[in-house]
Length: 191
Image (cartoon, rainbow, N blue to C red):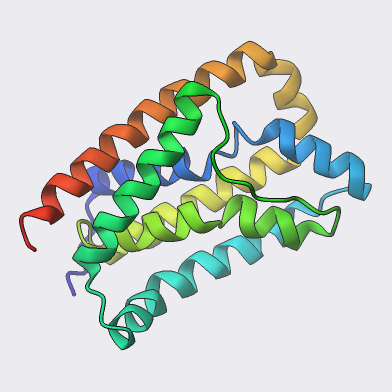
């Protein structure tokens, strides 16, 4: 396991996770959830999502090994899932049918909205390409961003407006699409 500190790599992984987590694009969903539940505990939601991502980053590979799947296989499968998420973001359609019951900040906010299947798949997929230090730092940076967004939800909604949120979704959708293609291309040759 390579344990080096590379700021460029950290920035790349941070941007990828930021696009997958899509906390800015989720602002309308989070506002709706806040109205249904009466409030969101930003600290609790952030810490739980951090825990889920870190634990999955480290034990996800072991789980795959037990069932006989390599990281490369998972990266290719993840590239398909990331492609679908990007497709949803760019075209403004919903392919997945996740339900959002009115519950506490942990479910459905921390999981599956912040640390959902797309995020967890991406973590294992990028693990095949980036070093673990960069990924852990990128997770922490993204959780800080998530916390800041949750704490300042009303201000951000007024600042960005519906048009700004829609533009951010499209831009990050294109970044995700490019990542999906890169992950597929770099891992298909190893099979």
